[in-house]
Amino acid sequence: MLTTTLCAALSAGGLGIAVMTAYRRRFLAAARIAAVSLVPVGLALAGLVTLGRKIGTATAHWAADLVFKPTVWMGFGVLAVAALLYGVTRLISARVPEGGGAAGRGPAAVRGGPEAPAIAADRPAASGRRSRGADGGLSEFADVEEILKRRGI
Image 1 (cartoon, rainbow, N blue to C red):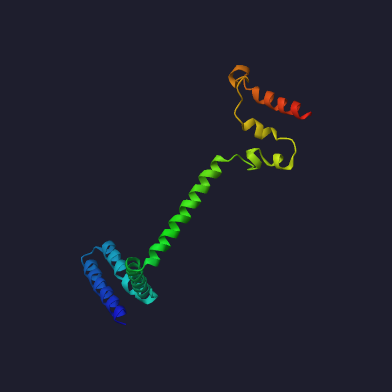
Image 2 (cartoon, one colour):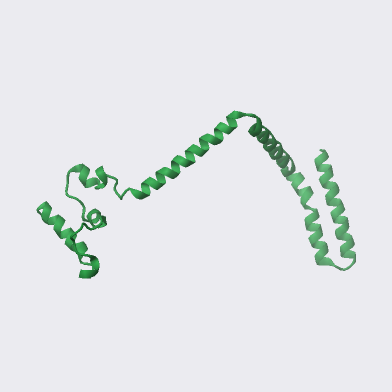
């Protein structure tokens, strides 16, 4: 009740200043002052002033609990562990090749089937093989051909 009265008084004062500004023929400035002066009464009528008070009170209680309750610190510790665990799993998943099968060889290795050429092409070339620059990028096809010959295809 007191909050609504205070907001109404602020709006009335602002509207009075807007009327005096309009009297001096500064209508644009007067309209702006009137718009700003209607904000407190609008906030009070919409209930946002009491909402702000409740949020402020809740924040103050939480801050007091933060200082005086060890369970709040434990909560922050749990959140830190969760964030760390999530970050570590993201880093590890970035290093594991696509497919994630047994020994990093892809799902075909788990089933016992032939290895996929795309996975073989992602592996670094073994020593003794030709480099890509020497044959114009055809070494990928040579790798695939070699795998197919090994599998009897």
